[in-house]
Length: 472
Image (cartoon, rainbow, N blue to C red; front, side, top):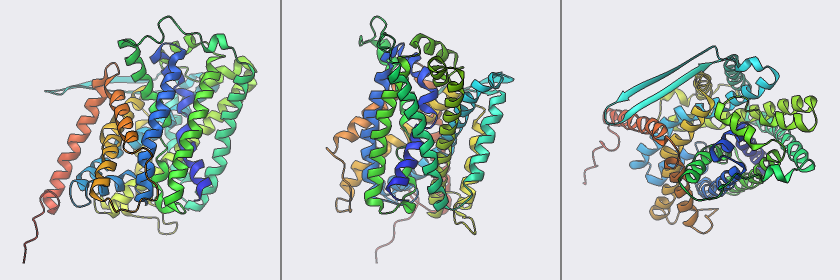
């Protein structure tokens, strides 16, 4: 894929259903239209972290993305072997969560056509108390929309069972649908703009206090989710033309374009749909199809039905791109001997990682039974702790360990973007209400991964149990 296909794939991966279905959640977290600060802050941190991905992606191209970055940064036969394994281990949870959230969001917008899709057929909340760690809570829910989400997961896997050249052309078609949807929403908002609604700030909206900071932290969880996907091109390094140039360009261009689209689109929607209605939807975690309501108030039912279909198209495009990118990561690790061998198998004709793709789709289908808010929060926290923070630090470690490594792209203003991105991730982790719940999930996954790695390493005499070679 060239620069155009790579940028298109990255943009549909970033946009997806996220900004369309999380808008009420962000507004509810901030308590008013000042929620736009969440998307602005999210864009700044995405650009800072994007520079980390850009330098590493250009210097260490190849399928696997963060797996390769972490392994090389910390030493492929030393600590990097453990950290890269932990990345793959957490990906068995976070990648299906990401795909499932897109499928759940797609089903949520389909509920505008068929409200009965949101009918709760069964639900259950469970709690497990762990000494010295606290209580782990998990819940599942079954609605007719759950079945829709599962079918979308499995259909995506079916579509991806083909050659990458076909997928590159398909990504451009999906991109046209995504951009058309965004353009129509922005045009409708600008031509029916009501500044009194868009900037109807409640009293004390910008007073810096505990409520403001916890609200901003909660909003940035969803903003981070909306922007993530900019590193997807790094997972396809072996399939990108001239990766030293095209990976950084596709990555940074997609962040810039998507940030502009998000900010303008959200202001336009706030100028038509009163923010108090969004707060109610966000708190109830239902009826999140705010863009459908937006179009219905401007043009009527026909427009709402059409834009709902376009958002569903956009959601599917994101699920398609996510599944494609993530399926290559366990494959790369298995080829390297640092994951289960079955994941290294490729299709005998089309030469894509068939086992990795199928396994990812099945686990994602199982995660479709989670609530959307829970899936997003767990995904963001797990990723920050086990991937993004250690990857940002890894760039600094790699510069120190291998100063002569060819770097076709070097981070601007190094190391400031790395430090700012890390500070932003830490803020998201600890500034929210009830932040302990998701952090416990991440800690449990991390500790379990360490135990599994150490058992395997001891059995196979790998680091840190490998005996030092004797000197002759």
